[in-house]
Structures are given as structure tokens and as C-alpha cells.
Length: 584
Image (cartoon, rainbow, N blue to C red; front, side, top):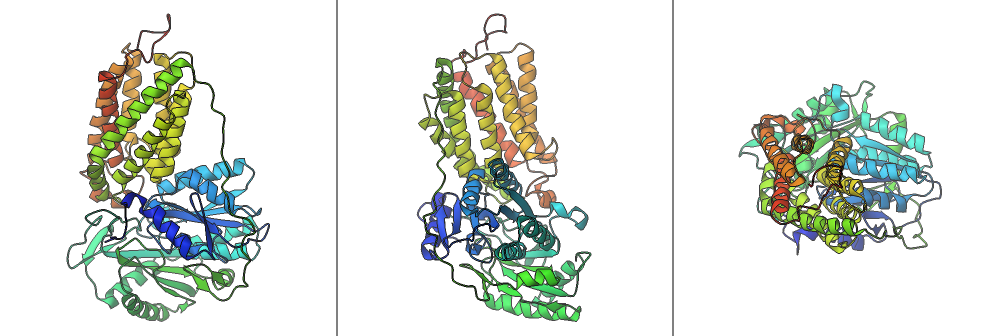
């Protein structure tokens, strides 16, 4: 269990601050993560990696010559926000373009993808290579759906070495894609991990059992098996990976035995010895292997085996020198410290003068967000437990972080237009929460604010536009459909019911009440669905019989907003001018 902390909510940030203090010759702190503290040659491609905290040495520990130029660091097991990724990449850029690389998780894809769009729009050529090495998370014919686990290391190392050698962005990207395709991993867990401040692990493995196919965010495996002997475990891991080898596999492999947090090095070495014998017996030559903690999951009791099938080109870059806080290979020439402190770009914008109506609606938005915060706080533990059934258990924590920040940012902006209030709230939600829910809720809140704008008056049509914009932002960004067992399964019934009620002449408060009831009913009905998106997808059977936490939280929020507006807020917040509909 993680026991050393003051406030669990500050754990990730304070741990990162301490990491930088202990490794100033390698890294410098920027808002959102770390970058190299040594000079990067002008024109060199910048490899920017990242993900949630709790995986050290991944990801910040791999920043340094020969691997990454920077790492965006999210909260515990949560994706860094788009703004964090953007700032780290901007600070890492040396003029040769940026390659973003990270594990294939929904939240990371959303946030890194948003940052990539922004960087390219500013003229910084940016590409992405997802790591998809985990064979347990999808079959071989759906390799693009696989998640990334310890195979992150092979992709990062070879892409970083290629960048260090001066290759251009096209070639660095090509080598990263090639490495990812030729990398396969499989993990097992003997018990779950515990988030800072939590009383219990995210899951338990029954005594005498082993969980096969775990994730690195505290997800349990996809199946349980009797606890094997070391020889049986080695045979299981090797045989499964060899059966999944790439089409162009040769006979030279990198083997990585990775400890996830509490398996002792002596045990890892014992297992590696047995794995090496099996690989040799299969006609393979093991090249420069690794055995130790490389991509962890806090205090999880578990391990994984990764195999990378080499060719001459990949072997050259795998063997190339690297010098980072947590991974060193060969000998590199000393690098000079950066001559100027790394600074974030200041983002300033002039605030427009709000209309009286927009300012009043903005103050009401502040009050509504305070209610959203309260209902999330009330149900935080419940949402976390629900998420832990087939996910990583952080939905309650992530929602709490996001809405706390959003409510505080909205309060600070009170008096501005509703568009400005919701912009500040949405950006704060995305930045603080991270993960999939952070990206979706942050973008949706901002979209609703943009739809409301800074008008002289507001009518029912504006409520329609705000709800539609909120829903569209989530469906367009998350790419989920009805039946995928996500928040969308509650969101779309809410939207459709709200719009239908307005079309029938109902005022906004009545339409909202009926729509909230529809959302809660639809959220409960997700218990009958199997997840087709997100981290819960590989654990579909575990999820069956339990509602989706994202849908549940949306239903709770919709209901609380409806109750609050009905009892507290002025019914004329949206008033249609004559000839444009009834009072709402």
C-alpha cells in the first residue's frame, strides 16, 4: 500500500516535484510534466512520451539523451490533459518536429490527439505512434485495439535512439511503427494495487490463483488460473507470445521481464532464467535483455514478459546508448545544460465585456457547477467501486478532481459571460481530471459555453443549442455509440428527450426534469450491456450486470442539476422574445 503522503490528491504532483529535485542533471519541470535539462541539438526530432503517474520508471524516468525529450505526466493512472501534453511538447521541440508516443488508452488518445491538432495548427509538425503490445487485450486480427503495457519501453527506446542519431521525423515515426508491430507482451497479477489514500486495493486475486492479462492501471486480468510454478509460468508466457509473433519475425529477440511493483528482483531473475532457456530451445537468440521494474503499477503484485523481434535496423537502435534517470545503456558524450530556463508560453486573452444577460447566466452556471461538485463528492466512493469492477477504479477520484477544479475556476470567473465561465471551468476540468472523463467533460462544458456565447438575451433555442453542443462534443471526441456501454448511453437519451420536450412546448425546467429521468433510467439499463469501448472492454464479462460508471455519474449530475434549477434558479433564465416561443 502507498503510505507516504500528506494529501492523496497532491500525490502525483509532489512525487514529480521530488523526482525532478533528485534528477536535475537530467530533467527540468514544466507545467504538465518534465523535459530534458540538457541541450537538444537544433533540428532534432523530439520524442514526447507520457501517461498517468504511478508507473515509474515510465514515463518521466525515461527522459534523457537516447530516449525521450519530454514526458507529459497525468494524475495517478489518468491521462495528462491536452494542455499539459501541448506545453511539454512545445518546450521539447527543437525544430525537427515532435513524435508523440504512448499506450493505446482512450483518455490518452483523446488528450494527446487534441494536443497534436494544436501543435500542427501552430506549425510544429507532430505525429503519433500508439503502443499496442498487450496480446491479452484484443486478438491479433484486431491489433489496433490492443493496449500498451511494458512494450512502451521498446518503442520509446528505438524511436528515441533514432531521433538522437539525427533521423528525420518520417524515419523516426517509421521505426516506432515497426517496433510496435514487432513487440508483444503478456502480464499476470497475484494481487491488485492501492491508490494513494485508498483503504483497499483496486482488486484482489483469490488465494492460490493468478490473474492473466492484467493492465497497468490497476485493471485485473481477463481470466483467473491456479497459481503456477515458476517453470509453468515461464512456459505460459513464452508459449502465448510465440504463438502471436509477427509475420516477419526473425530469430533474434529482446526479452524484457518487467516487475509491476512488489515482485522482488530475485523472483524476476529466477523467472528470467527459465524464460531464457525456453527461448533458446525455440531457436531464438536473446539480445541485450532487460529484467527489473520498467513499467510499474504502484504496488501491484505482478509481472509481464515482452518480446521484441529484431532485424538489423532495429537492433542497431536498441543497442544504441541512452542516459536517463531510470534507463542507461552504453556511454554517451556529456551534454551541456540548457542555457536558458525552460519556460511555458503564456496564454493570455482579453476578456470581452459581458452583457447583463450573459453575466447573469454565468453566475447561474457557477451555482450549477457547485451542485455538480456536491453530487460527485457524495457519490465518489460509489463511482470508484463501480469502476473497479472492470476498470481501474479511478472514475470517482477523477470526476472529483475535475469538478473541484471546474467549480473553483467558475467561481473565480463569476461576473464574466456564461461563455467565459464555462470556458474556464471546462479547461480546469480537463487539466485536473485527465483521463477519458476529463477530456470529454472538459470539452463538452466548453462547447456548451461556446453555444451560449455572450448574448443580449437568451431563449429556449439557446438551451437547445447548448445541450446539443454538449452532446456533440462528447460523441465526436469519444467516438462512442449507443450500446457501447459508456456515458453516451445516458447522454443521448437525455439529449433526445430534452429536445423532444422543448419541441412539444415544455419550458426548459420541465424538459430538463424529464430528460434527467430518462438519463438515470438509461444509465441503470447499461447493466445489461457489454462494454465495447475503453479499459473495461477486455473485461466485458466482469462488467455484465453492473451499470457503466460514466453513465451513472452523468445521470446523477443531470438529476441534481434538474432539482436545483427547479427549486433555486429563476425560471426566466431563458426567456424567448415575442414570436420566438413561450417563456422557458
